[in-house]
Structure formats: structure tokens, C-alpha cells
Image 1: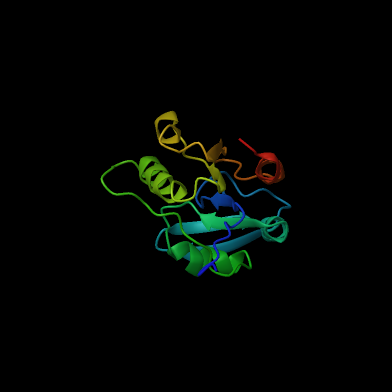
Image 2 (image 1 turned 120 degrees about the vertical axis):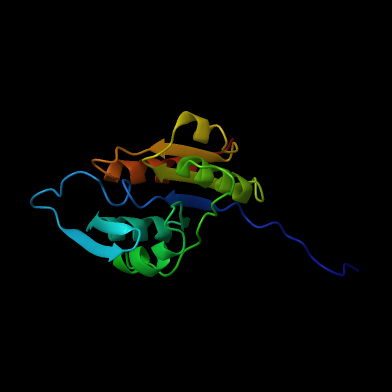
Length: 167
């Protein structure tokens, strides 16, 4: 007789999102495009209005969302409501580094190493090579042009990668 049953959970697919320069472009607001606006101590954001629907579609396909930002939990208080999201996990920041990109990458590396079966795609505008090298092999990183921010093809590419990635 078995006293307990352990069935491994299916690998989870994660899309990790930065705020400044990724969801909220640093370039000029484009005429004719609708934006969702908010202010916080971390800064002001203008997020293109098409993004909430696109993120909802990703969630509906089984992709989990998480923050990959120095905004940490403030992202759930300020950005998540703009995107019609319930609070989502926040990738931790590591300590000991001066550079935000390294703090974020090292924090995610620690998180991702707990479940090597899970797959992670990071969308961020600040991904120098030395930060990407910290990431474990179950994490893929996509650099976003901060002046343009995230575009539909970035989300389509992440969805495709997370759906086909087998190692």
C-alpha cells in the first residue's frame, strides 16, 4: 500500500515582463494610439491599450505571467490594474549587485533553478550580455527596443517559443 502519491506537475510556461521601456515605451507617445496611464513613485507609465487583451490571450493559452522589474510589488498595485490583471508573481531581485539588470537576472536565476522543468521567456529592454549569461538554460531572454516598447510580434514569438520549447 502506498502512503502517498506523488505525481509530478506539468512544466509551467512563464512570460516575465519588465515595465519601463518594455510595457511602457520611453519614446514619444504615438498619435492615434490609445494608452493606459498611471503614476507611481517609480515613475509614470503609458502602456499601449492593446496590451491587456494580448496578455489575457496568453493567459488563456496556459502561459503564466510574472513581473521582471525593479518596480517589484508596486507593479501589482499600479500596473496590474491597468492591464486588468489580478496580482501576479514578482521575480525576486538579488542583492549585492549595483546594476539593475544583474539584480533582476540573478534573482530570476535563483527562482528558475527551483524548477528546471518550467520554461521562462523574459521581455526586457535592459538585457546586457553579462546579465543574460547569468540566466539558466530554462530561461530565454528577448531584448525590447525601449523607445518602441513591446510589440505584438514579441508576444507572438514568446507564445510560439513557450509552446514548442522541448530542450
